[in-house]
Amino acid sequence: MTELLLNLENVHTHIGLYHILQGVGFRAQRNRITLLLGRNGAGKTTTLRTIMGLWPASKGRISFAGTDIVGRSTSEISRLGIAYVPENMGIFPDLSVKENMLLAARNASRVTDIDQQRLEWIFELFPAVHQFWNRPAGKLSGGQKQMVAMARAIVEPRELLLIDEPSKGLAPAIVNNMAEAMLKLKQSGASILLVEQNLQLAREVGDDVAIIDAGRIVHTGPADECFARDDLLKTHLGLALCP
Amino acid sequence: MTTSMDWTRLISRDRPGSRLLIILLIAIIAVLLVAPFALTGAKAISICVKIMIFAVLVASFDLLLGYTGIVSFAHTVFFGIGAYGVGIAIIRLGASWTSLAVGASAAIVVSVLLALVIGLFSLRVRAIFFSMITLALSAAAQTLATQLSNLTGGEDGIIFRLPPALMPSFRLLDTKIFGLTIDGKVVCYYFIFAMSVTFVLALLRIVNSPFGRVLLAIRDNEFRAEAIGYPVFVFRTLSNVVAAVFACLAGVMLSLWLRYTGPDASLSFEIMLDILMIVIIGGVGTIYGSIVGAVAFLVAQGYLQDLLKGASAALGSLPGIGKVLSPDRWMLWLGLLFILAVYYFPTGIVGVLRRPARRLDSSSKPSAKERLSIVYRWMGRAR
Image 1: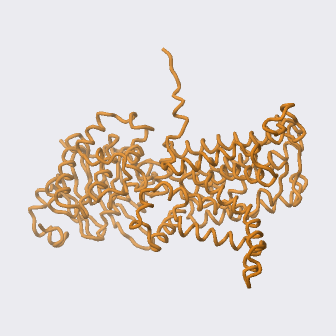
Image 2: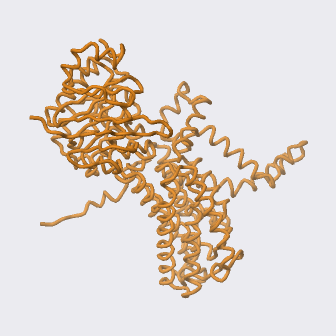
Image 3: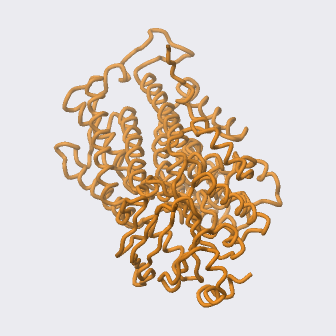
């Protein structure tokens, strides 16, 4: 039986004069990977940023685990248990990998304060994090940076991970590792809302789908059903997502 | 069960990171330590004290600019509050250690409150507005100091006495040590030395604490820092408050040495420019750079005129050279030296010294474009 974790109802977001989200509504269930798909400029990243409070919703309701989060500050939302992995490897380039991890472990001032079992698990999921532990994060390759960004998001247990295009610009082998890591994360009890343009990765990991087009959700449902419908993929996602 | 405190945690683990830098820092500290015995003349000692005061002042400014990415022009306001706090307290309460402590404590309280107010009102707004607000505050503080003459002595400032142990007439020992009479002035020198070392080490510890790590994250990308759960506005305000406290303490050190404070000595915009130049020459975001930068800048500022006098005397007969090397033009040469320092050490002296391997490899020397991009990067980061 599924349990509702995140619920967006009629969410509108304005950025300056632009009306980007025009009534977005969908649900993400606990312990599932929900895909948010759409063309470039459809409003996927804006949706994630609106959930995090980085861009405030001008109208509508967003609830997380039953708590209304519209109007709360980003740091508050983060403390409720949502981790955000922004696109373009959202790491702090001047800090070492270790410092990036320590930043996210807010109750730890040194590595020994982090749950060592969890840290070992993270090293298994993302070996690059262990390998380049003391290296400045800005000096890593794209794939390694993405792994650090993902690892940072899970250094403390979070209920929901918002992951924005983790495969962007990465080699296929690393994308496969990423898919594996996300499935393991789900097995560990985490829920993921994933924005992804790579259809292969999306198919591999997705449980549910919400398709967004021009700031509105145009389809929601199980991932298998969605990927079986060519008309849906072609109309709303375009050729970019076709394998 | 016994609990013991881990004292090593009080010391920063951020090592200088370069053998050359370690040697340079040891040399600077050694010279400052033996200066009263080894150097003759009031000017040399005065420059040493100025180096110690500016090391603290610039390090506290570096916390804002280098670690938090905030450009504040109000740093001299807190410096002035520290200097005036001690002066006013001693004038009103008498020359004692108690009035010194009262003055310094009151100055710290005022600095904290003012920094909080500035932070609360202006750190939410865009970068340029914060800088403008601090610039206006700096000008207002100077005007206030000259207008409130009953309290501040107006444009003339205030001259005051210190507790007897810090006055030149005081004799700590009857016998001379290495030919030097240990009087109150020497005691005052070492008191300032101890304060300077303590405050710089404290700042070094702060920037290498979890708090400092969050500041660096905010400087790198404030949205990401907010997204992982750190209230950026709160941390920026806290950084502003901590920097203000240390600038205030630097002001206390200044008033101890000069036994005088006035608008030009502690509040002028020239001091703010000096701070900016020292932090850039030394290396933004390094703390160690405040020490190295203060030495490079203040020694150049103090002796450039003498150097030009000598050069002018030697080469003055050559047509045109005499005018160019005139000691009156020392500011022009200081400016040129600054431009050269920024061009050749875009990451500051400490930034370059911390990358010795790269520096020796001529193929990896930064191109002119790279040098500019480093400077632009810092400018872009600074809010």
